[in-house]
Image (cartoon, rainbow, N blue to C red):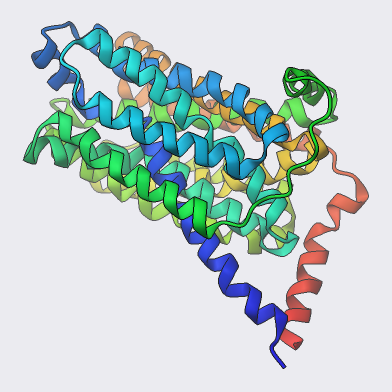
Length: 412
């Protein structure tokens, strides 16, 4: 007789791999143009501040679109939104490579941002609803790792392509990759159970107000913003810091220093085991403390090897905190989890949009070292937030349920 647990396990592994890959390449589109700004300045004969809109236009559309499409996935289904987003992302990405006027690049980056924003809130809600409790934090860990790795992978990818070919091929190559992702999601991911639509088309958007009535949930969004203010602020400051006369690294060398941070991000898939042992709030708190320590250490000693080690500690802390935060939001939100997670993504990328502004201001007015310390201080302040979030008794016992289920699986 076939053990049902063993027969189902490979399917979840395949689903995890596909969702990880698709999450990585979709969110990478946020960071594609960061290494291309100087290229756009020369190509379109524009100022650096204007060239920066190639990234900002996408980010604002991505953040706002997450609110729109997160609510719609409640009505039309998670898989349908993911498929629709990848289909539109394929088309807009290919067209971007053909433009020869900067204003059209901006317009298409906005459309690309809207298309990409259909994916993250839908994939998070899909993972929470379609994976069993004992696998839920693990899949969220993989998706969160993909979101974090995208901040580095997107920049490295576009840098390599533009050095070997031209900026157009960054989009020509990525378009077919999005199409492959569209096929993978379509044929390999089971359909979610779409509930019968209730109310009007605008009903899902009213849910956004409802999430602020959930006890403890609004406090989670404070952490959402501070996580990406610190993450993107760190990378923004790091580039300027390493290219200064103190280190004098080249653009390519800076990218490889950033890439080392990926090592710390591999802790994220193990969040599930940590949550089962010490609870989701404790994992979140430990992640915030670890990230604060790592980021604070970056601003202590002007030594490259020490800086690299501290950056690994920092990214490990972020990678520990983010999936725990997503799991906590999903638990607190209940039936409003899609709207709650879409607002989480909105706050993440609002934080990502504010981070360069904050970092540049602090660098110009004080110093790089002070900027690192201030960003660490912001994270450290957010560590008090979990103490004000209360979970219901039955939610506090999820770790015990996980342990019992894992024991049962081993016994069978």
